Image (tube, rainbow, N blue to C red; front, side, top):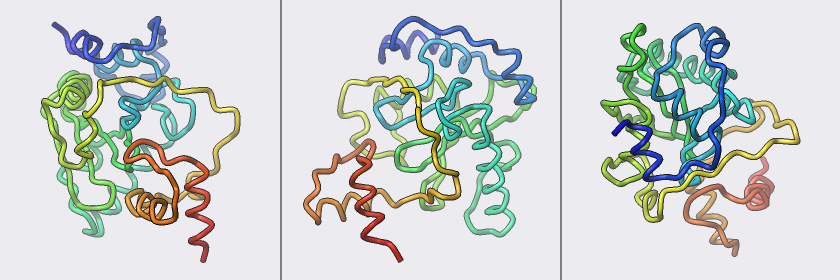
Length: 224
């Protein structure tokens, strides 16, 4: 059984597979892509697994989740700076790390693109959102998703309740309003936000996206 078959048996795709023209995508990135990722992107399209894990996609609906958008380069630049200044240990050469996904809590998923000319043997790495922790998975992205969503692999950086429900995939919806610039939306400590919301009488989910009105109230309450 291939990795994509194992994943689709565990987590049903949203519908008819889409057809992506991979030649211009790879040309734009100036690198070949793993075979498993192409099957994953064709099968599921853009979206999120368990309302927590978003995989970057050539048809990503915003720059934050678009494979050929600016996020991979921005994140790599941040890692280079962290490594140069010794702020946070980076266990892999930042030049080998290519951001391929993100989580609701602010972690990033990376391909470890070594060897550069053999993408089907790239591993997956995850960094801690607000700390020095890293986790490396010795396998491809599709196998990583399958073992994480099935509970076979426990990523210490992810919430314990991630696999409490049946694995699911939610397709992305088109974005009709242009998002604010990246630098105007600094990351928020979602744990602190949820604690504040509960203390102030808001009904906030334990995981998944924090509703926009709660985040707006948090930002209003914490204006300088």
